[in-house]
Length: 462
Image (cartoon, rainbow, N blue to C red; front, top):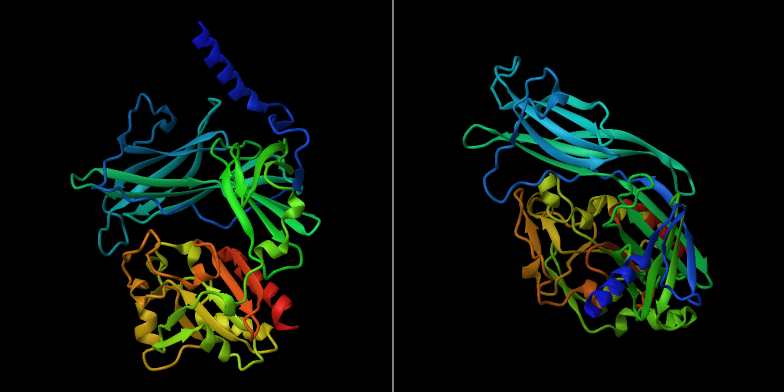
């Protein structure tokens, strides 16, 4: 009996941690004396598409056959196969497919399928046709459905899309296989300044005011007016611990309309002890000695030769990211790490904003072979292009087919590591001719141009 009482107390404590009220989802175990940060949130919709429908590890399995009795939503439509896409916006989305034979106007009879996507309300109402059309075998069709929701965020966003992709192909036995994906590209983000610290929070994937159980929160701290200091950031479950250095935070509450998030610090030293001196980057001249290979010029650079290229007058700008290619395969498998412009446009963009005509170096871990063979075999690159890996054999030289890629960090020093930059983001670092860091910032692809604008304001026109 005592054993049962013990477990009952544990279960009650777990449920007491989170209470689901009409106004807020509140974590009630943060001490009343804990420092709190209230961050207003703005809702937006990202331009991201639903993920490319994943290929199965083995040969494609046939989709589920349609059952006329169970699939009454089809009424008189004669479809052969179906596939659950996913659910969002209080609807379940299902793709139905059938073969189309002797398609007119096709000079070669490719495999073509007639695809119908239905949205079936969870409330039991009538099904709604979301999309209908012919799909060429193996080529995904992009589908979007607009949802209306109660206003969210300080800007009262009331509509968001559900984005899907559906692809149909045949199995070895001639049956249809359906691959699909679904995403809700909503985002909540905001920041607030407290003293010399700027706290930023962001989340994604909300369906209106519904908070998904697997929601993750991104929390970051920057120093006001100090772009040279890298961002301190963390990411974790909505109901878990968020650790930044010695500081431990939790999400205490989220407004019912998602217009504000409250973060409580439950452990660690006082926030006012987090000073710029603790995290200020060291000058390049004080970093451990490093060298990097110029991939195009086949030249070896080190910290001294890079700084000497500034001629004692110009800033040195290091741009960290993969060089993009012409096809989608050439950005495989890290599109979030691919620079959103080619190297010529990058150099032109920076120099158009900078009066001092800086020395520019792109530091990359991946480059298309076409770039090396067709563009820079007989002519110089518009800037220095360095291998991030000190041992250049780890550089990923990509062909048109998906290349081999080191999922784990190879055991070799990197320039990114020497500058203490995170692994899975684009980054821009600038220093003066003496090696003092003037600017250091990580960003996503869609924030890259804004980061270059910020670089120009903080570094180039001083």
